[in-house]
Image (cartoon, rainbow, N blue to C red; front, side, top):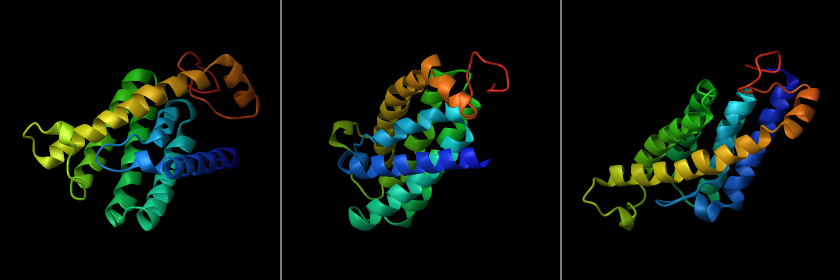
Length: 187
């Protein structure tokens, strides 16, 4: 990772953490919409800087929130960033099929985060389907991750992939992974 990519990773980490903090009221709990997770979809376009950035951003945001708002503890501080790392890495690996990548990328967050949140929060009442509490929580978090990543994130990914945005970014030396371009700009 060169200095430009490292700088971009820091920008994504800061942006993710700020979005978690600003939207803190809806970013945590058994029913949530973590708006910051929309950035995870951008791994399909920016690659490594987003993978690193959203993982560090989750570490920062979860640490902040655990200290000042909820005390879920080290489980959230450790496993939230791991879930983001896996999710962003899957999206990058599947980047040639962007919507599928975003759908698949939501699953690790739902499974990992939903599993441990069931230890701290009761499952949503809307999921009173005689399911085990952890399964109800996994379903809830997976649905919210689908909205954030495959919904908002996919729209954001497509918006940032437009030529009017791509051209200035690549002109400044950023490496982008574009599905229709098979040259030095990306694969």
